[in-house]
Length: 457
Image 1 (cartoon, rainbow, N blue to C red):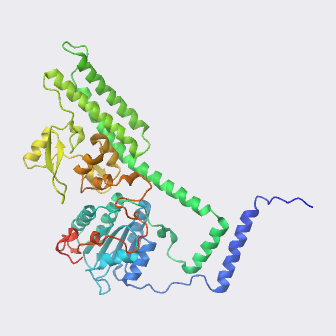
Image 2: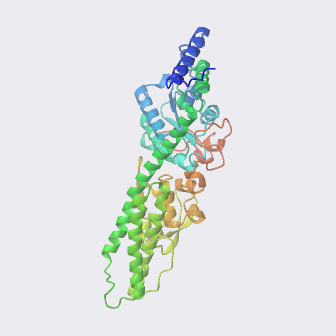
């Protein structure tokens, strides 16, 4: 009996090609390949089907408000951000009743995400599933875009989409990668390829997801690095200004210990930041800086004979201000007042009815307070304030608050409010209250806006 021969190295690729070509011939012979599309409809079903395949839809009747080149550019930005942000630009027509439009569109698309609709001359509304973007954040982004770009459809939807993409959680829906056409024949062809190729497709998806996560973490760490370097530099300048010599007359062992602790904290912060590879690695850096600032405050008290300071949290408004001296009442826009620790200067400003000197960081939309700058600042703040319930209570109602309320923010597990992750299919199972509000023509909440109280949503 002759020995079995091992297939040549090129046999499998040739076999795969042959099988695919055979399937293609059969599909063509059966007339199953997709035919040229007919003119697109303009109803809500058409809009929903289009958004399942691409992040931006513009009704042909209002194409002049967002021309094809601008539409494609915005869609590309959203795809590159890999976030579930949907934008529709529609005419003021009977098939798009404003009272139920946003909610019905979310129902028909059936994917968790952020939804924005521009209608008519200047009507604009937006909503988001809570696990993707906090209620207040969606409302505030909507109003900011309205106020900044009244009468400018392109500017309004572009600013909203870009800002939403920087703050939204989850990933772009997989259906955006399927292209705009294909029908059942494409499904058959893809099915045949999967059968032949085995697990190749699954491996490619895993690699893509891993690459996207690494790119996201790299971008977040780059943004954090700027902020943390500023913190380290500020602490180094405090050490330079310190007029203390361990051998000076009157120096005690306790003073020298405080001074050494501050120097060690500075060196540790620099070392940990140099070693950081993920956003979570920033937390030990800010922990070290906080320890160092308390050591300096203790040293200052020993040198002047003042009572030793109580170990308190740093100033909430800007940890570079050093340890807090009192708790003050503060509330984010639209949120409830809550006590937060403040340094002496900020406590005085708040008592006088002035705005505290809050720490702002750069975002694609310009400077923002760190508590509204995105999920990357969770470990940064956690190092200063310890994370957990204390910090969560202080930033409730902000972007950072939503992150801290969701332990899965940096994990590949179900998202914040025990619902489907952003970009996944949920059908009609969503909280309609998240899409409550009205179309503001020229700004405002149109009778109550997102938080209820008017607006027939």
